[in-house]
Image (cartoon, rainbow, N blue to C red):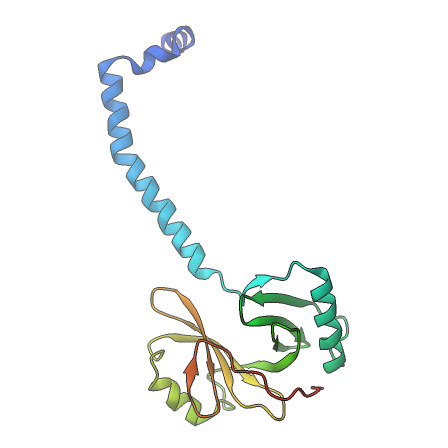
Length: 196
């Protein structure tokens, strides 16, 4: 051991100059490196499939303040609840927040105009309409697991929003109108109402 340390201290570059050491190093690179790369690729792929957001966080404080003020006006129960804001490229803004045990998703268009609010509910619960479950079982998404079910909570709005996960772990989001039509695009804005 001491001789090896002395050898290394005297000439660290000689360690890889012998033929047997080069062979060992080649075997390590040949056998270990591909396994390491596979592990990194799998870990990265898994981490990417587990990340789910509605878009990217809003970086403009003025936009956040304006949207927050409107949301607080529309929902007087909001108080000081924490609200997370996202911008979905080309689709508008989204707010995720909770009031007590209820979770909400509120949408605004690209101009910052209120569109609608959804309340999270249990997909396996009794309040999911049977016609929605039937439409889902006949849809292109039927082989995915519903990991989040949100129903429109404005009095004049109908429809749902589903968060899905396929067997490979990929997350997708779909909007369902009152007729059971599925779309990856959110519904267009209609009349604005104040929610309580």
